[in-house]
Image (cartoon, rainbow, N blue to C red):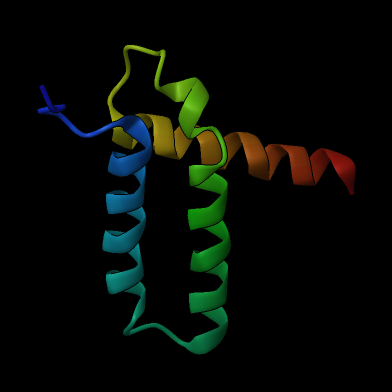
Length: 74
């Protein structure tokens, strides 16, 4: 029997694709920043799979964690 619902990774990929579509009307330097945010959001997909929060919230939390990590490492 197959799986009826997408995995967290699949949902995060869908979120990333939706954000990329939005960024298509942005300036090129902003599009590059958006790509970095998408990568940050996907970083913790497997850990977020075990959480009870929505995939959208997990994506944002993952991006925030990675941004804070970069800020602290500067």
